[in-house]
Length: 274
Image 1 (cartoon, one colour):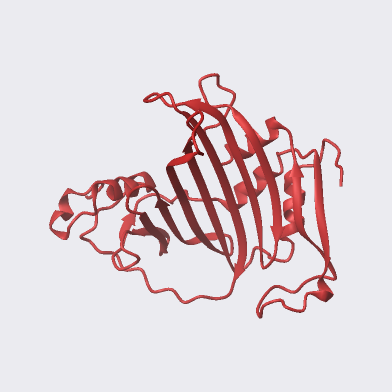
Image 2 (tube, one colour):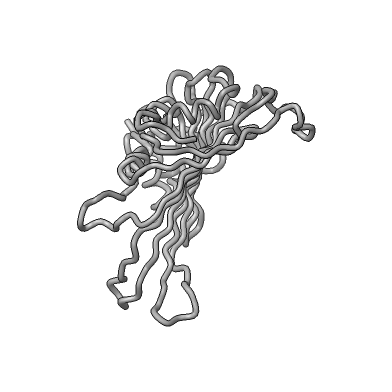
């Protein structure tokens, strides 16, 4: 399918997501991965120097943020925390939900509504898709959403460099045309629909030379965003532990993770404690 210059990624995404709906419980899974490879000239292949994955699970109930888990996997021990609604406010946990501290501000983790609105501003040049016959889908798992007679299953999207850079800026990715910034080398965008709908894209940066040993470095990044409808779930109640400090925002939660969780004996020394 070739499109005119007025077609954006938003309508394509909405077509793939048709049937998931916005009411009830919806889970969004966002995974960002970055790999840096050292590629010495004349060597036997690239060696991985740094690799990290930022994985986020966000659950909405009737489009309101209900719970979230954020995990960072890298060279060191994994770092993760939970966020959950507590009355009209929110709380955080650093130990999987055993102890909860108070979040002073509404957490800004991932806003599905804003994300989908931004997709409508990203122009598409061309799209190639597969249409499947839903009546032949005999192996669909129990509880999966009903298939229409014909539905779009996979979509490869072509867009120009400017449009892809705008897609990256949805997550404030550090890739632009600044002469001091790494240059975008290659990229790809695709959509897939099963029991969830996923937007996947990857990009690579032009090779740069490390400052330490003049070895060329290759940087490869990818993002996967999956949206799925959930049934009703019973979550344990959130009870605040007054031994944990109040935290102003998610930057404060990351700061606690970097420096270690406070002990109950240090309850009066935490940031934001009144």
